Image (cartoon, rainbow, N blue to C red; front, side):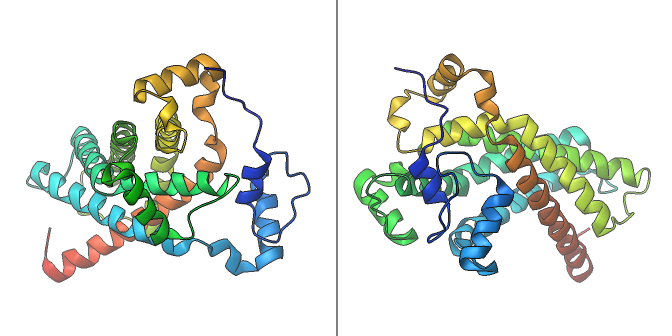
Length: 276
């Protein structure tokens, strides 16, 4: 097998750009700021929200499974004062990540990656979200939506283990000897962004492997370990950290917002149903 090329695919870059927007240098990598600028120019602010429905289809159940599982597991470990230790949060986060990987993330991510690769092909065949899902299942069966399951479980498990561990560690440090002390949403957001950054640096290599295993060229790899070996052999260790910078910005903001919402919802539930 020849080494994978690191040169951006002009057609793939064009597919990633908004329809009707002509790229100044289609054969070169697009900076995030330039992509935003061209998207707004071509489609207005609404253009930044294209594909929102597909994102919601997966994000809502993913968050529900993740935090529901974490709450269930953490309630089994909390002491009489309702405190969860840092080590226990690591275990609970790992369990939540594994469960969400199997139930939601793997099929959702497989479909998403196949869609992206399909749009980069010479003749795209998927006309929309539901049409694409139907075609994938028809051609490959339900198994077709579970490509890269091992890599996804490793990625999501480590992802949530890191995030919940960092978040709980920071919360325990902030609260000190007073478990009942409430967090200001701004503090929660700051802690969440820190947890997101830690997860990016901690498991981007697994994310790269997962994406390769779920793409249209997944047949090139015999297994998750074979994929990791070939990336290292033909592209070098830096290939495992492709996309780290743009992912860092997105994930930090994403995790900060999610944890703020999570903490505020828990506060409301504790007051309404006295769940403490």
